[in-house]
Length: 262
Image (tube, rainbow, N blue to C red):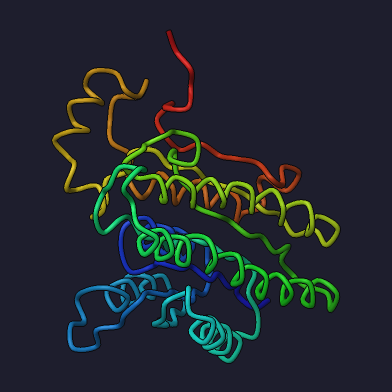
Protein backbone atom coordinates (compact mmCIF):
# COMPACT_ATOMS: atom_id res chain seq x y z
CA UNK A 1 0.00 0.00 0.00
CA UNK A 2 1.09 3.55 -0.67
CA UNK A 3 1.82 5.74 2.30
CA UNK A 4 -0.99 8.09 3.36
CA UNK A 5 -0.37 11.76 2.63
CA UNK A 6 -0.89 14.75 4.94
CA UNK A 7 -0.90 18.41 3.96
CA UNK A 8 -0.01 20.70 6.88
CA UNK A 9 -0.11 24.48 6.56
CA UNK A 10 2.18 26.53 8.77
CA UNK A 11 4.52 23.56 9.21
CA UNK A 12 7.82 25.36 9.68
CA UNK A 13 7.66 25.81 13.45
CA UNK A 14 5.62 25.46 16.61
CA UNK A 15 2.38 23.50 16.41
CA UNK A 16 2.69 22.77 12.69
CA UNK A 17 6.19 21.37 13.13
CA UNK A 18 5.00 19.15 15.98
CA UNK A 19 2.14 17.84 13.86
CA UNK A 20 4.44 17.07 10.94
CA UNK A 21 6.75 15.03 13.15
CA UNK A 22 3.86 13.13 14.76
CA UNK A 23 2.33 12.18 11.41
CA UNK A 24 5.73 11.19 10.07
CA UNK A 25 6.03 8.77 12.97
CA UNK A 26 2.72 7.28 11.81
CA UNK A 27 4.10 6.76 8.31
CA UNK A 28 2.61 9.76 6.52
CA UNK A 29 4.29 11.47 3.61
CA UNK A 30 4.02 15.20 4.25
CA UNK A 31 3.42 18.35 2.24
CA UNK A 32 4.40 21.21 4.53
CA UNK A 33 3.79 24.87 3.83
CA UNK A 34 5.22 28.12 5.11
CA UNK A 35 5.13 31.68 3.89
CA UNK A 36 8.81 31.58 2.96
CA UNK A 37 11.57 29.08 2.24
CA UNK A 38 15.16 29.82 3.20
CA UNK A 39 17.37 27.34 1.30
CA UNK A 40 20.51 29.18 2.43
CA UNK A 41 19.75 28.27 6.03
CA UNK A 42 19.17 24.52 6.10
CA UNK A 43 18.92 24.40 9.88
CA UNK A 44 15.72 26.44 10.14
CA UNK A 45 12.15 26.50 8.94
CA UNK A 46 10.77 23.92 6.56
CA UNK A 47 14.18 22.51 5.74
CA UNK A 48 14.87 21.67 9.38
CA UNK A 49 11.42 20.07 9.56
CA UNK A 50 12.10 18.17 6.32
CA UNK A 51 15.28 16.67 7.76
CA UNK A 52 13.49 15.67 10.94
CA UNK A 53 10.47 14.21 9.17
CA UNK A 54 12.50 12.24 6.65
CA UNK A 55 14.44 10.59 9.47
CA UNK A 56 11.28 8.46 9.84
CA UNK A 57 11.65 7.07 6.29
CA UNK A 58 8.88 9.17 4.79
CA UNK A 59 8.92 11.99 2.25
CA UNK A 60 8.52 15.70 2.93
CA UNK A 61 7.76 18.26 0.23
CA UNK A 62 8.24 21.89 1.35
CA UNK A 63 6.09 24.51 -0.40
CA UNK A 64 6.28 28.28 0.07
CA UNK A 65 3.28 30.53 -0.24
CA UNK A 66 0.70 32.65 1.53
CA UNK A 67 -2.54 30.67 1.79
CA UNK A 68 -4.46 33.96 1.54
CA UNK A 69 -3.23 34.19 -2.08
CA UNK A 70 -5.33 32.19 -4.59
CA UNK A 71 -2.31 31.62 -6.84
CA UNK A 72 -0.26 30.32 -3.92
CA UNK A 73 -3.05 27.90 -3.00
CA UNK A 74 -3.23 26.72 -6.60
CA UNK A 75 0.53 26.13 -6.68
CA UNK A 76 0.38 24.27 -3.36
CA UNK A 77 -2.21 21.88 -4.71
CA UNK A 78 -0.32 21.38 -7.96
CA UNK A 79 2.89 20.52 -6.11
CA UNK A 80 1.09 18.21 -3.72
CA UNK A 81 -0.67 16.26 -6.45
CA UNK A 82 2.45 16.20 -8.60
CA UNK A 83 4.42 14.67 -5.72
CA UNK A 84 1.85 12.27 -4.31
CA UNK A 85 -1.35 12.40 -6.40
CA UNK A 86 -3.55 12.65 -3.33
CA UNK A 87 -4.18 14.17 0.09
CA UNK A 88 -5.56 11.99 2.88
CA UNK A 89 -5.33 14.43 5.80
CA UNK A 90 -5.49 18.21 5.59
CA UNK A 91 -4.38 20.13 8.69
CA UNK A 92 -5.32 23.80 8.53
CA UNK A 93 -2.80 25.16 11.01
CA UNK A 94 -1.38 28.32 9.41
CA UNK A 95 -2.44 31.56 11.02
CA UNK A 96 -1.18 34.92 12.18
CA UNK A 97 -1.56 37.05 15.26
CA UNK A 98 -1.81 40.81 15.27
CA UNK A 99 0.96 43.15 14.19
CA UNK A 100 -0.26 45.44 16.95
CA UNK A 101 -2.87 44.90 19.64
CA UNK A 102 -5.51 47.60 19.56
CA UNK A 103 -8.77 48.02 21.42
CA UNK A 104 -11.81 46.93 19.40
CA UNK A 105 -12.86 50.61 19.29
CA UNK A 106 -9.58 51.50 17.59
CA UNK A 107 -8.52 48.54 15.43
CA UNK A 108 -8.11 49.17 11.72
CA UNK A 109 -9.62 47.68 8.58
CA UNK A 110 -6.09 46.92 7.37
CA UNK A 111 -5.42 44.73 10.40
CA UNK A 112 -8.85 43.12 10.17
CA UNK A 113 -8.43 42.26 6.49
CA UNK A 114 -4.92 40.84 7.00
CA UNK A 115 -6.01 38.51 9.80
CA UNK A 116 -9.22 37.41 8.11
CA UNK A 117 -7.55 36.70 4.77
CA UNK A 118 -4.88 34.48 6.29
CA UNK A 119 -6.74 32.91 9.21
CA UNK A 120 -10.19 32.46 7.67
CA UNK A 121 -10.41 33.03 3.91
CA UNK A 122 -7.28 31.02 3.13
CA UNK A 123 -8.34 27.88 5.03
CA UNK A 124 -11.90 28.15 3.67
CA UNK A 125 -10.86 27.96 0.02
CA UNK A 126 -7.92 25.62 0.55
CA UNK A 127 -10.28 23.19 2.26
CA UNK A 128 -12.80 23.60 -0.56
CA UNK A 129 -10.19 22.58 -3.13
CA UNK A 130 -8.72 19.72 -1.09
CA UNK A 131 -12.18 18.42 -0.13
CA UNK A 132 -13.13 18.12 -3.78
CA UNK A 133 -9.96 16.10 -4.38
CA UNK A 134 -10.77 13.91 -1.38
CA UNK A 135 -14.24 13.26 -2.78
CA UNK A 136 -12.67 12.11 -6.05
CA UNK A 137 -10.38 9.79 -4.10
CA UNK A 138 -13.35 8.31 -2.22
CA UNK A 139 -15.30 7.75 -5.43
CA UNK A 140 -12.30 6.05 -7.02
CA UNK A 141 -11.81 3.84 -3.99
CA UNK A 142 -9.21 4.88 -1.47
CA UNK A 143 -7.18 2.91 1.07
CA UNK A 144 -7.54 5.65 3.65
CA UNK A 145 -10.62 7.51 4.91
CA UNK A 146 -9.77 11.21 4.42
CA UNK A 147 -10.05 13.81 7.16
CA UNK A 148 -9.80 17.55 7.59
CA UNK A 149 -8.55 19.20 10.77
CA UNK A 150 -8.81 22.86 11.72
CA UNK A 151 -6.55 24.26 14.44
CA UNK A 152 -8.43 27.04 16.23
CA UNK A 153 -7.81 28.53 19.67
CA UNK A 154 -9.43 29.23 23.01
CA UNK A 155 -9.82 32.70 21.46
CA UNK A 156 -12.71 31.29 19.42
CA UNK A 157 -14.83 31.38 22.58
CA UNK A 158 -12.89 33.69 24.93
CA UNK A 159 -13.26 37.43 24.43
CA UNK A 160 -10.12 39.58 24.19
CA UNK A 161 -11.25 43.07 23.10
CA UNK A 162 -7.66 44.04 22.29
CA UNK A 163 -7.41 41.14 19.82
CA UNK A 164 -10.88 41.31 18.34
CA UNK A 165 -10.11 40.42 14.74
CA UNK A 166 -8.07 37.39 15.84
CA UNK A 167 -10.92 36.15 18.05
CA UNK A 168 -13.45 36.62 15.26
CA UNK A 169 -11.24 34.73 12.80
CA UNK A 170 -10.95 31.75 15.15
CA UNK A 171 -14.68 31.76 15.88
CA UNK A 172 -15.25 31.69 12.13
CA UNK A 173 -13.07 28.60 11.79
CA UNK A 174 -15.17 26.90 14.45
CA UNK A 175 -18.26 27.39 12.28
CA UNK A 176 -16.29 26.37 9.20
CA UNK A 177 -15.59 23.05 10.90
CA UNK A 178 -19.29 22.44 11.41
CA UNK A 179 -20.16 23.40 7.84
CA UNK A 180 -17.57 21.15 6.24
CA UNK A 181 -18.33 18.32 8.68
CA UNK A 182 -21.97 18.44 7.63
CA UNK A 183 -21.25 18.67 3.92
CA UNK A 184 -18.56 15.99 3.73
CA UNK A 185 -20.08 13.37 6.03
CA UNK A 186 -21.81 11.59 3.15
CA UNK A 187 -18.40 10.83 1.68
CA UNK A 188 -16.96 9.48 4.92
CA UNK A 189 -14.65 12.49 5.27
CA UNK A 190 -14.34 13.43 8.94
CA UNK A 191 -13.85 17.08 9.90
CA UNK A 192 -12.55 18.14 13.29
CA UNK A 193 -11.63 21.22 15.29
CA UNK A 194 -8.71 21.15 17.70
CA UNK A 195 -8.79 24.07 20.12
CA UNK A 196 -5.38 24.72 21.72
CA UNK A 197 -4.98 26.68 24.92
CA UNK A 198 -1.79 28.37 26.07
CA UNK A 199 0.89 26.64 24.02
CA UNK A 200 4.62 27.31 24.19
CA UNK A 201 5.47 28.66 20.73
CA UNK A 202 7.27 31.64 19.21
CA UNK A 203 3.96 33.51 19.17
CA UNK A 204 3.45 33.18 22.92
CA UNK A 205 7.08 33.63 23.95
CA UNK A 206 6.61 37.40 24.24
CA UNK A 207 3.98 36.92 26.97
CA UNK A 208 5.70 34.10 28.84
CA UNK A 209 5.99 35.92 32.17
CA UNK A 210 2.32 36.92 32.09
CA UNK A 211 1.10 33.37 31.50
CA UNK A 212 3.61 31.78 33.85
CA UNK A 213 1.94 33.79 36.60
CA UNK A 214 -1.63 33.13 35.47
CA UNK A 215 -1.06 29.38 35.13
CA UNK A 216 0.56 29.23 38.56
CA UNK A 217 -2.49 31.03 39.97
CA UNK A 218 -4.88 28.47 38.51
CA UNK A 219 -5.92 29.81 35.10
CA UNK A 220 -5.92 26.20 33.90
CA UNK A 221 -6.67 23.14 36.05
CA UNK A 222 -3.56 21.47 34.63
CA UNK A 223 -0.87 23.86 35.81
CA UNK A 224 1.59 23.84 32.95
CA UNK A 225 2.09 25.29 29.52
CA UNK A 226 0.85 23.20 26.62
CA UNK A 227 3.43 21.97 24.15
CA UNK A 228 3.13 21.57 20.37
CA UNK A 229 3.35 17.82 20.97
CA UNK A 230 0.08 17.97 22.92
CA UNK A 231 -1.71 19.26 19.82
CA UNK A 232 0.15 16.79 17.62
CA UNK A 233 -1.09 13.85 19.69
CA UNK A 234 -4.70 14.91 19.10
CA UNK A 235 -4.07 15.20 15.37
CA UNK A 236 -2.44 11.77 15.47
CA UNK A 237 -5.51 10.22 17.08
CA UNK A 238 -7.68 11.56 14.28
CA UNK A 239 -5.22 10.46 11.61
CA UNK A 240 -5.18 6.94 13.05
CA UNK A 241 -8.96 6.75 12.59
CA UNK A 242 -9.78 6.61 16.29
CA UNK A 243 -12.57 9.21 15.97
CA UNK A 244 -14.32 8.06 12.82
CA UNK A 245 -17.79 8.38 14.36
CA UNK A 246 -17.17 11.85 15.79
CA UNK A 247 -17.16 14.21 12.82
CA UNK A 248 -17.62 17.86 13.75
CA UNK A 249 -16.16 17.27 17.19
CA UNK A 250 -14.23 19.98 19.03
CA UNK A 251 -11.17 18.61 20.83
CA UNK A 252 -10.02 20.97 23.56
CA UNK A 253 -6.27 20.71 24.16
CA UNK A 254 -6.11 23.49 26.72
CA UNK A 255 -5.26 22.06 30.11
CA UNK A 256 -8.92 22.30 31.08
CA UNK A 257 -9.23 26.03 30.38
CA UNK A 258 -12.65 25.48 28.78
CA UNK A 259 -14.13 24.24 32.06
CA UNK A 260 -16.36 26.74 33.80
CA UNK A 261 -15.29 26.79 37.44
CA UNK A 262 -16.35 28.62 40.56
